[in-house]
Length: 270
Image 1 (tube, one colour):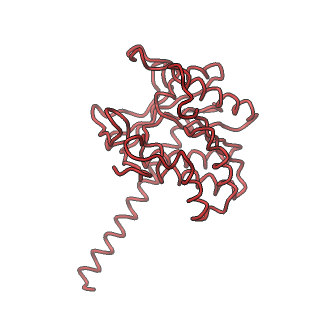
Image 2 (cartoon, rainbow, N blue to C red):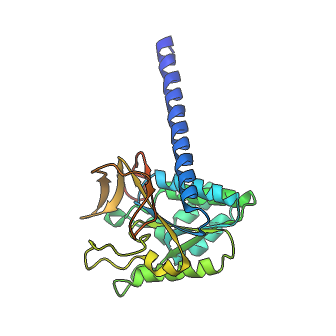
Image 3 (cartoon, helix red, strand yellow):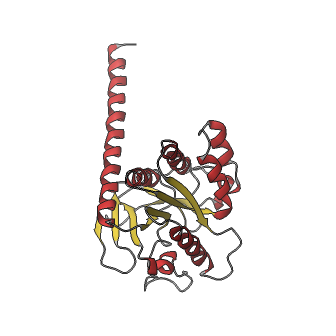
């Protein structure tokens, strides 16, 4: 290899390391900001844009940080029928076979244009991070809190059903924190005035008596995977949002990351 080629390789490695370090620092800063703003709240609703690489990493950082203080239950927008699969994976050695078994369950194997962004290798990495924390003796767990496909009858049934499962889990958690990761609409504490009539009353509304703290996780640039006129990559446009306290009745806080990157989707290509 020539000196020029070797130098190029070295610079590429350094650049990648610097990028990874910068991203780690960014997640640490964002997680610290959320924890500081949330204070002593035990029920934290994390409103996300589906299908990004960054949000699972941020949530993993939050789980790890909170686990140093006490029990943490991470609730995922996954149907309750997947609970046994998650429990089995948490008890596994995290091997490739265990990961393949988890990803073979009905939730993870949906294909094509019905893919809404919730199924990604990045989310599986988040599940693996919880497993590792548990194997290290941390008091952590996972909750699949979504309702089953086809079980929804009325407009509000899904969000009410999700709230019921979260409420039961919270009642069974006498101390520590329950982190609920879900779509940003589900995490709202009230239905916006500008919402169309068909929008259901959000999950957060049905949990208000428990004193939840809600955060809207956004980004200044990039793209996420969503379903608007079909499921696809959606570019972020408009005025860049800022991190800080919100003066509205929907969220308490907004955490603005620098950029969203399309997740490594399972069964769909960005």
